[in-house]
Length: 157
Ligand SMILES: [Zn+2]
Ligand SMILES: [Zn+2]
Image (cartoon, rainbow, N blue to C red; front, side, top):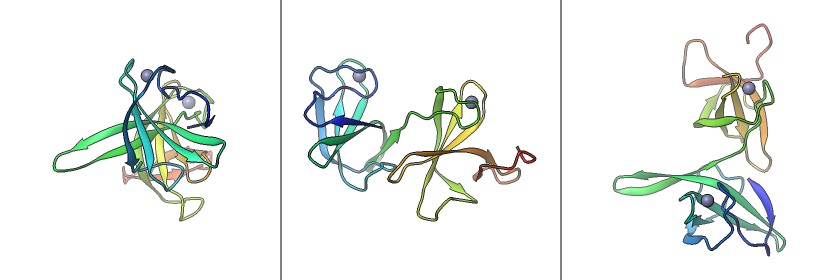
């Protein structure tokens, strides 16, 4: 996600193409957006990537890389992909592993988490995105694969 000046040209969040993006819809719900509001989604003619935007006041807009998961008979699910810095090694080479995971020790019950995997060190970083982006070192539970812990003690990691 980046904040853009709302009056600037909209660039593709994937490849930076700033020509005319194709407007797909103004009423898209993004599963893991920072703002609980409907977003406008644009398709890039150059890389085919989708970019979602939402206005924030008069000056700024939120902009995300988004991916569409098509479902039979049901509306597509749209998911934001954030640029995440690895909380273990600091590399900026992370890719989304799981969206909206179950965390045993969330900072707040209100927060939801996505998990990203680092291509450099192979470890996982959990991201919470409501309001602000925050990252934590993350480890899977030893027994339950679907359960994650934030910021484990060094003895556990
Ligand atoms: Zn593009
Ligand atoms: Zn790493």
